[in-house]
Image (cartoon, rainbow, N blue to C red; front, top):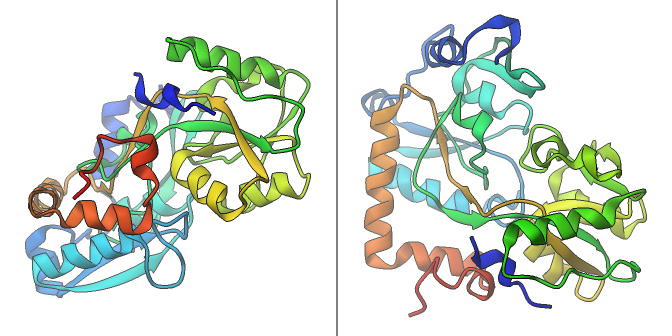
Length: 301
């Protein structure tokens, strides 16, 4: 199958978005997240969720190694703090939020547990209202996936990504579809309710979405590129890509909106790793197949 489609290109409680961002930027309790405060504490707290090859759950992963290197670059110790998709932003900012039909909803104050979220977090508009993203660490897109034995064939890519997305969505009328709330795989982000699909929000982890369709829990699921590529390698010949449902997207670490110094420090660290080739080597260690789909993202030494 050709994957050329990859290479083309009001807030709850009547709070205005600016005020919500201010409330999140100034949470109850001390964030202690500036570079100086982190150095005084002596620890960088990395909020992560086991997902694809970014955080494997076995003590390694692309984002684990990236944050370990950042901690060393700052001259502090590294500490991994596991979280969940629904809790991650609250664990970072001190304000639990969710995306709703009327915008970002503020649910209340929670304890701050970390300094940066890094686990293949996709940059999507509602998240940009509440966190500050650092440099891009991985390219992505959301795909529609099915079992290999599905009678629905992959779309034939055209010269228009918009048309490819329309054709992909057209296969879903009357079909069952899995998505995941509070993630980039939330069907509402891509107007999937208009497709006529019978949509279910998955209760398990993102890593369990591909196994769910293999177990006949649904005919289709949404997956983003990194998880889809891992699944295609893990279960060769058992699942297939039908087509894209989103424009190209980016993944990046998330920082508190007020922690510009820490975010800028991370961006300088990334510039150094890109310049010396170590970032490319890290990406290829965990995603050796990325060059097949995004040939311009990393160099090939």
